[in-house]
Length: 253
Picture (cartoon, rainbow, N blue to C red):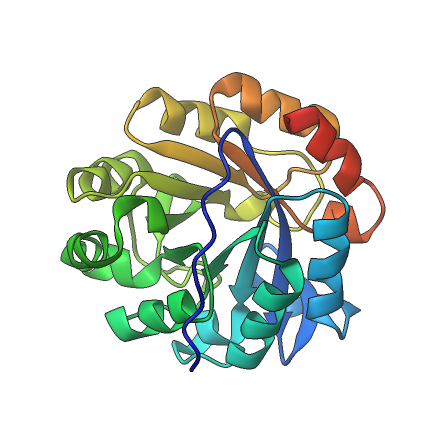
């Protein structure tokens, strides 16, 4: 794979339009349920170009197939998204990144940041190795939270977990500095973010917290920003026309 020059990381509050990939299509799941999928397009690179044209400086990309089975399935689509977004847009990539070489592969494709979840919870020292190799600013931790517990394979009902605050603190002590906090029960439902959960995580004052799940309006973005979150990921609300990317960019700048 051709190794690309990584873009600089944009500063300030991070507004991240999301591109979730499954079978090469742009989709969204409800509450992380693979049986509750909505398809929004078949050209992920076109979505990246639209977001970049609207002024977005971050894009959040998820390989859902990789997240489900731990094998990278969307490498070509991710490479195309990074190329379409252009050098001024930083792409963070999540899904199926279970070892160092998987992370290295998305970095070589041009990702500015890799997001790891299941593997970090199973083996916290994995985070130590990633931070040493790539730098703390290039690694984010996905904390998918159900009933107060950070769970690996968050789409699986009954998956074992770790108390959310304890998971964040432990991984911060191992070098992580950015945490994507997803309230599973809000994901893809357009019902607003779990502000109480986000408040608890921000108040730990250990790393940057990016809000995910339920953010569906400018008011939601303002609310999570007021809590002290460093960013917000928005998916379904964009694709269904409830939130305009250009307006969100103006708000967050």
